[in-house]
Image (cartoon, rainbow, N blue to C red; front, side, top):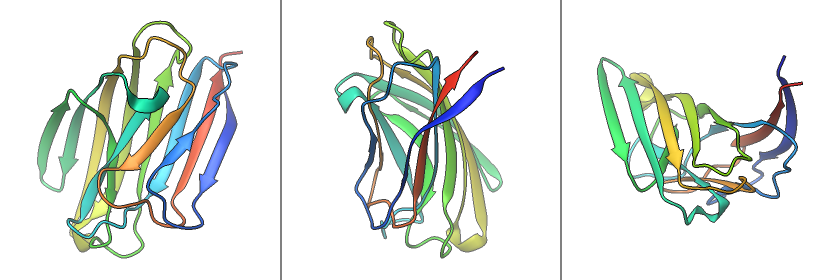
Length: 169
């Protein structure tokens, strides 16, 4: 049976441009990141969250399948990992997007794969979306740090981020 162990948590006391989990120990088989966040951006009712590993210099790619209030959509990125969507300052007040990322075999010496599942309310309560992502990152060393950042604006105060290690013992 898998055991989840909290490695690190960060509940923001003020807005932040990004959140980093660094010095990730090499003592687990898999990693899970969970967040509940919102952006300060005022340009749209939502923005996406980017995920970077080990400093972000590797090639990142992701495929997103998204369902949003009556329509579906997909996005393929060969330059970044889309790690979910979060509401912005123009979305319904005090709503946050929530997501979970699963990174199996983060210690391997092969390219890293993973998955994401997230939901968010937006557009002043007239719409909601759900998204799932398959990701591939050209990192061939153990994952030692993860960075999350909104594509526009900053994460707002009280956004929360949790990193768990999974052991299969």
